[in-house]
Amino acid sequence: MADKKKKVSADDSNPLGTLANLWPYMWPSDRLDLKMRVVWATVFLILSKFILILVPYFFKWATDALNGKLDMAGLLPAFLLGAVALVILYNFTRIAQVGLNQLRDALFASVGQYAVRQLAYRTFVHMHQLSLRFHLERKTGGLSRIIERGTKGIETIVRFTILNSVPTLIEFLLTAGIFWWSYGFSYLAVTAFTVWAYIWFTIRASDWRIGIRRAMNDSDTDANTKAIDSLLNFETVKYFGNEEMEARRFDQSMARYEKSATEVWTSLGWLNFGQGVIFGIGTAVVMVMSALAVQRGEQTIGDFVFVNAMLMQLSFPLNFIGFVYREIRQGLTDIEQMFELLEVEAEVLDKPDAVTLAIGQGAIAFKDVHFSYDPQRPILKGISFEVPAGKTVAVVGPSGAGKSTISRLLYRFYDIQQGSITIDGQDVRNVTQKSLRSAIGMVPQDTVLFNDTIAYNIRYGRPAASDAEIEQAAEVAQIGRFITELPDGFQTKVGERGLKLSGGEKQRVAIARTVLKAPPILILDEATSALDTTTEQEIQAALDVVSKNRTTLVIAHRLSTVVDADEIIVLKGGEISERGTHSELLAKGGLYASMWNRQREATQAEEHLRQVRESDELGVVVRKAPAT
Ligand SMILES: Nc1ncnc2c1ncn2[C@@H]1O[C@H](COP(=O)(O)OP(=O)(O)O)[C@@H](O)[C@H]1O
Ligand SMILES: [Mg+2]
Image (spheres, helix red, strand yellow):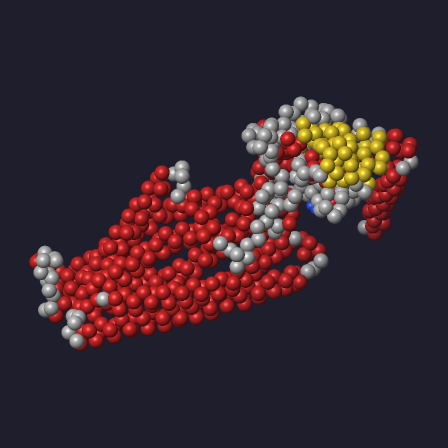
């Protein structure tokens, strides 16, 4: 069963669904204070719209008063009827309206930011719950970009749906009502038609632009993934002198980005122009109607000014609604991808009734285990073996035989198709992943360290450990002396992925953190095979100390490291081809024996070469000596 990915394309995307997903974050059930802020923001919003409608009225009255045509007896108190008082009121209402808007925005800011934080947190936690398979298939650079854009998108949505779309709707309804009531149905009809045409055009044009925007996002993600991958492989690029090829690849992605980003801007120009034309025509019609009415003596100049002021006022949020619609759609596109990630189901899940692993000595048993990553290609075909408590079992075999797969299965990164894997008699599928994984310590072939200090990386094995315990663990892993001799000691930074340490040093840091974790079960997956023979011998000594009295599964390519194992299992083609102790297997004269002989010859050749090189160096000194 693979991780389920719900594929959302431009056509079947569901903005309402995405908004519904977002709602619990904007109206958080456990945060009364935030809900109160939402309520107050709404109150201020409605209040500000009513005040906004007063603005053109004061303008009209002031105009009429200046004209000597103000006929308002009874509507306003007498002292307000002077032109100067009306002009002051006109400006005062404008100020009050701006003030209320800012109050509303400020109240809502914390609600929006809370939503951003909650969702970013949930996505991050979810990323860690997803299976190894998902992460192997996914590109980390692209993932982090999706999360980054998604959280920005939430801010956009929260701001624009609540702070702009709803207010604009209210304002339009008020304007339309006043036009109808004061000047008749024709004014309402023209205004409503203009606004409808404006919105229709905006939505059509914006939808067209969303496809372009997606192409831009995709090429942006692509360029970012390539750049990160290329920089992570910095050394490899240098080994092969392929800087130019890398730069070309990156530039090709950026060229795609350049093209689609340019299209995004030119299409924006068309959209803005079209909006201007539609609203301009609508305003012209209404103003001509009003001008004719003034000429006929049916309206005052104040009315003419009022109609224009109302329409101008409506044009501001409408101008915005184009922008808002675009932003909301774009925000939704970005959030949609993030929710898509949240919808990916983890492949390996705890059972509802999963219990904590009751770990004693940590005896491991594989019974008739069948497993494949891909149904087409079985990797393990019925493997059975046991690692008795406190004993050491080695798994050897050619590369690709499925050795590391065994360790991943014990960790339950994947579920097996048939058979069972138990620890102290408990099936790994019946216990919580957390308790299972806390019982096992792993020293992999290629240790990757966090870009922090040595102390941080060792403490990772048990975050609560004291400094003294860390030093002790380093001592056990035989790296204590090396660290204390460093200028910065335990506070030395290890560099990205630990690249500032040599392979052997990194490996010993990994051993130290496993020592600190002190798990009952230990897996050494080719822990020393990336190292030279001398370093291997040093580390082997550290590993021998650590694995003493622990149930240990050693996966090894180099057989010299497994001669002491209680049992050696030879894996070939997904099946166990031989098993026994070192001497039994040698006596058998099978695959193990031939591997052993081949490796011994290789080691001897290596040894011989070293001796030759050493004597050669001596030779240089000797030859040079007479000349001086
Ligand atoms: N995530 C994966 N998806 C598909 N195939 C995989 C995956 N991981 C490993 N394999 C394949 O499974 C086989 C066994 O891999 P592994 O257990 O790592 O071998 P090894 O014995 O060298 O440790 C290999 O042929 C490898 O290509
Ligand atoms: Mg392996």
